[in-house]
Length: 186
Image (cartoon, rainbow, N blue to C red; front, side):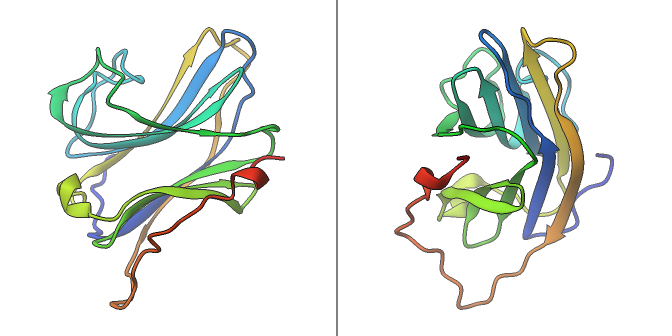
């Protein structure tokens, strides 16, 4: 997007219709938050050289994974092992899904929604100092990438919103989170 994020603390929510890949098909949709516009390329549809964070959802025939990576400006396009992955036990990928990325001085968190119901919120960082500056002045980008996916299958972006977020001064993230994995995507 052309505009810089004006918020020091923020949440960004990407809502889309997912695809259900078959054997040998793989697709992902990713939200990027970077210091500058990113170039296109072969690394998740980018060059792999940027400074910022990426969070997304990757679909293949057998699994759905949340992916997250913090990139420091070096070229990581040949290395995928630095990407944090968390598998979601999804049985029925229909309806709408939302990926929400939340950044405050207290935490960075990824939330996943299915049809407006929170189904996952266990991936978070409590010490945001180690992430560097992810406050205002950076750019959001959305990419999708398809490997061996039939031409008639694609993600449908329904909406993208960025909100200013201010947590109450007494807010403390819950440290003993357990995700409700047995209820996800029945």
